[in-house]
Amino acid sequence: MTYMFSARFPRDFRPNRLSRALEARRREGAPILDLTVSNPTRAAFDYPPEIARSFDHPDVLRYDPAPAGLRAARQAVAGYYAARGRRVDPERILLTASTSEAYAYLFKLLTDPGDQVLAPRPSYPLFECLASMESVDVRTYPLFYHGRWAIDLDALAAAVTGRTRALILVNPNNPTGSYLKRAEWELLSRMCRERTIALISDEVFSDYAFGPDQERIATLAGEEECLTFSLSGLSKIAGLPQMKLGWMVVGGPAEPRDQAWERLEWIADTYLSVSTPVQHAAARLLAAGEAVQQQIRRRTSENLQFARQTLAHSCATPLAVEGGWCLTLQVPRVRTEEEWTLDLLSQCGVLVQPGFFYDFESEAFLVVSLLTEPVVFREGLTRATRFLEDGSVQ
Image (cartoon, rainbow, N blue to C red; front, side):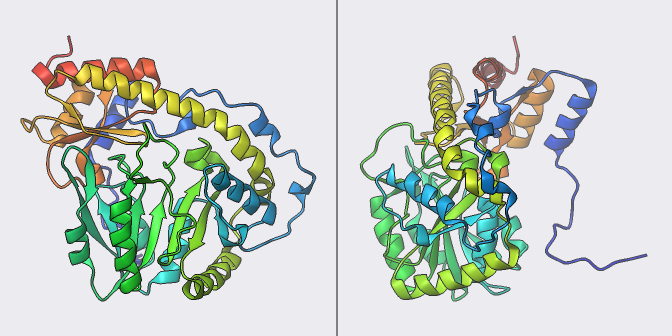
C-alpha cells in the first residue's frame, strides 16, 4: 500500500556516516570522549533547587489562555532586557514554546510558499528544515574570516531577490561565535527598510560574550529602524532547554509593527502552545537561571583558554571566537572533514563535528563544544591534538 506524503520532508532519512559510526561504538560499549555536548542539563552543572520550586504557584492548575502569553511572564522577560540596559514594552513580547516555534510563526507571518529567506553560512543546520516545513526557500549569505568573522555585505545584497521576505541574523553566530557590529547593523537596517525585508535576530547566545567590544550589538530588541523580531529563550540564557519557553520581541516602525503583532497574535491563538505552569514560573526561572548562566560562562571561558594554550603550537588553528558555546578549529587538508571525524572517533574515541554540518564553504574545519565537562574536554582535545599532529594517540 502506497501513501502520498508531503514533499516538505527530506528524501533520505538515513543517518550519515558519523552517526552510524557513533551508534556502532556505543553498541560495542567503547568509551567516547564527547566534545559535541550542547545540552546543559547533561553537562554536570549545579542547578539551584529554586528551579524545581518555581512551579509552586496556585494558578498553575487554572487554564486562562492568552495568545501572546500571560502578562506576568512577559513582564519577567521585559525585566531580563531591563537588566541588560534595554527598555522593552511587555506588549511587544510574544511568548513561544521555543525559538524553533518562533521561526515557524515568523515564516507563516512573512512568507507565502516559494518565497525566500536569507540565512547565514556557516550556521546551525536548522533553517532549511524549518523553512521547508513552511514551503519556503532558504538562500544563504556568507560570513568571511579575516582574523575575525564578518558578514559579506556585498554577497548578502546580491542574494536578495524579489521574493526575499526576511533576513536572519544569528547573534552571536553558531558556531563562529561572531557578533553583529554597529557598522553592519547600519547597512543592514537601511537595506531592510528600503526593500521592505523583515529582520529576524536569533540572540539565544547573546549573554555569553568572552570579552567587551564597543562595536558589538548584543540585541536588536528595542530597535525601530526596520521591522525586527528578536528571539531568545530559557534554553540557552538560563541553561533550561526542558522548560520550553522562548519569546520574540517585535520592533520597528509603528504601522508594520502593529500589523505584524495583530497577525502573530492570531497565529499564537491558533496553537496556544506555551504551557501555563512555565509562564507562571518564568520570573523565578529567569532569576534562578542566573546561577546556571554564571557556571556556563566560567566553564566556556576556561575551556577556551585551555584550547588556545593546547593548540598554540599545533597544526590545528582555533579561529577567533567572541561568544557562544562553540569553537571552530581549522585543520590540515590532508584528510577531508568526514575522514578526520571518523578517524578521531575510531582511533582516539573522540567525537567532534565536521564543518560541513554547519555549511562551511571549504575544508577543513572541526567544531567542538566549550560546554563540555572540563576533564572530558581536556583529555579529548589533548588526544585530538596528538592525532592531528602525527596520526597517533600516544
